[in-house]
Image (cartoon, rainbow, N blue to C red; front, side):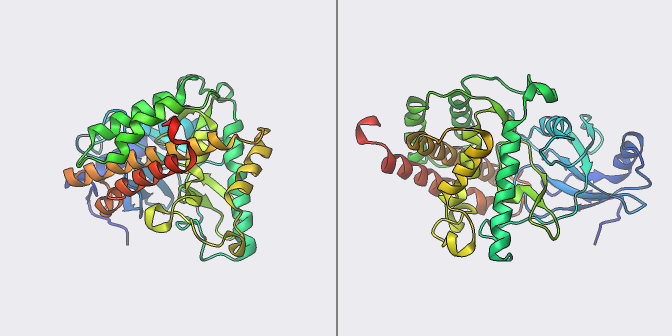
Length: 358
């Protein structure tokens, strides 16, 4: 049931959202918005609180805001989220329609933006237990198509030429996530320290640039209610300009991680389920983007880097949980996965690179 009180408790801190102030802003900035807003928190999301927003005419929207409290530098960049979905509107990359951005924290306590509501399914488990075998294969094929389409967009053509730097992306990102991890350490993780030392010395030589989503999980996409196709890619908080293989390797982590480790499907019988194996999925992406087959050593590096990056993100979630500023009740349990993910990343290095290269 939607909360129709004058204020709604914010899920990330006891601070309340003033629905009257919010409604006044919406009426002034969102064409067609009527009456007083009601809000209902969406399930999931460890970073930016996201709400179903409904007006007096029962028209539905989505509101996404920064969490309250002290935040890590450059984190929770909802202004960048709004910019990229606005830029991609009308492209081959399906996104929700961007409707309005508010930088004024006095309205509801933090900046926020509003986008159109997209009716559809969120598929939380990459093994797709609720789908038939044939449907699973088509879902993965359409997801592959969407990721390839994103990486094929010319940033300059959609006004995103200055959305990030075009060279040295992976080395910079290793530095960034090292800093983010070190700013949120709660207990030392030896595997992270080994990765921090090893990764910068083994970055592959290719230097490419595309629009980089940064969190291309299956549960960050809305699928048609009854058809196996993507209607919208969500959660662009980590987007920038970056290397396509780094983005795609993060997207491919479910093949390397188990469900217990972090939303993975390693160890399941992909053929029996109708889900392509990792190599087939990567090859399909290469065909769609016109890329030559990926050097296996480079691919293993990008997977290890992606696990390192995920561990740094999870450590930040754990720190926010311990500080009391996390936007999800499950944040502590999710953040505790940082250590095993880091250990999995280091095992990846040990398994695929000769001892002499470390």
